[in-house]
Image (tube, rainbow, N blue to C red; front, top):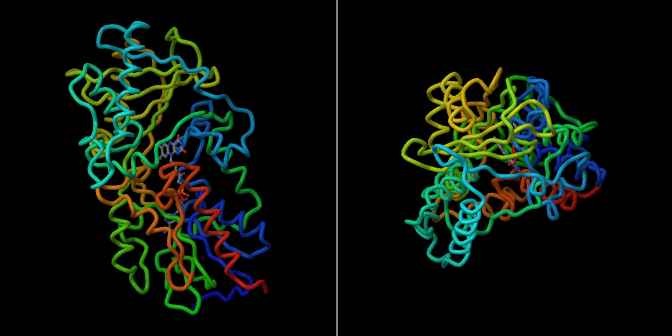
Amino acid sequence: MARSDPEVEVAILGAGVAGIAAARALAAAGRGCVVLEAKDRVGGRAFACTTLGAVFDHGATWLHQARENPLAAHIGPHVDHDTLRERHLHLGARFATAEELAEYWRAHQAFEAALAAAPLTPDRAVSEAAPRGGPWEATIAHWLGSQINAAELCRISLEDYVKTGLEGPNLLPREGVGGLVARLARGLPIRLGHAVTRLDWRGPGVVLEGPWGALRARRAIVTASTGVLAAGGLRFVPELPPEVAEAIHGLPMGLLTKFAFRLARDVGVAPFHSARRAVSAEAPQPMSWIIRPFGEPIVFGFVGGARAWALLREGPAATEAAARADFAAMFGEGALGEGLVTRWGDDPCFLGSYSHARPGHHASRALLARPLGEGRLLFAGEATHSRFAGTVAGAWLSGEAAGGFCAADSPRR
Ligand SMILES: Cc1cc2nc3c(=O)[nH]c(=O)nc-3n(C[C@H](O)[C@H](O)[C@H](O)COP(=O)(O)OP(=O)(O)OC[C@H]3O[C@@H](n4cnc5c(N)ncnc54)[C@H](O)[C@@H]3O)c2cc1C
């Protein structure tokens, strides 16, 4: 039996960034909403903890393109990482010299310029338009694919890649992106531990059901990841139209696994430095590291794409061992103490880290963002944003837009 909650105009599925932004937009417009969140915490893929004695974001780390990033307006103490970060590129037996690094960055710029200039029609994989054969190309492709987009360039639509490209400034909040997002959720009507398993949108309103009971509302905003939507654990009645199901299929989740370690000894680099290995026969899919953020005695790193999925299958101990070996190849044994490894790929609330569009599916984001059932059912979340997909900025803007749509489209009671 659906609980009758006459003041609930909008039920929001998910208290991640998009759900929080939608709830705030509705609250600002004086509209009622309830946010149903499966987990026992808010933030979704923006989540920080202090398990290792320093703030560590399990998910989102940077506010990219800060001048256009809506979350930058809410940031507390932070650094502009680009102004502090010195980059170390390890070449197998030593770090690159300043000249080699300059050469690498020139090749990087040329690589990105080639992609930006490539014809977008017909759509194809990024790798088909990417420069090949130079000494740095494999390292650049690995960085831009697996490490930044959480999927290899051969899996990603060129048009989507170009249209969702990001620039700096890249801000690092002292409280973590997770801390910032949790702060923005305070006071919102969020019900934790409320997994939704069935959403009936036949009308006139919607009914959301789960092990906790049922909730009737006029409209629903669904912010679950495309990984969750594709897995089918959330049943829609009636089923989603075929073009919407196809759009979800066109926006699969990549995987970026993050890990953090306490530093057991000094590794001789200043706070905020980044270090990674060039692609080589010994390191075909290397990881990336940030050392001593905010001067804290920790390092964090990440590995994405196919290697992240393979390590996920092998288990957290294998991921941790691989991460230790990657770091030791640059800084020697014994530098890392206690560590922790994230598992976004097999957490049923996410099933991946963030979405990319398959080649040929660049239009899927806009399609997924269209209201269904005369505006009773809306999708929001990073995957639905055509410009800032894959980021907290895209999630926030999409949630704000969905909340704004519901507020504008409903007569005030
Ligand atoms: C490792 C990693 C690194 C990242 N780095 C960055 C970065 O540096 N900068 C950046 O901008 N972005 C980054 N991102 C991406 C960013 O975190 C996401 O784009 C953004 O947080 C997505 O927010 P969302 O609201 O769309 O989705 P989510 O955060 O997935 O929110 C959806 C919510 O719905 C809940 N939910 C799911 N299913 C159900 C259900 N059936 N019933 C009820 N609730 C449900 C989930 O628990 C979740 O809380 C990163 C992500 C990861 C994982």
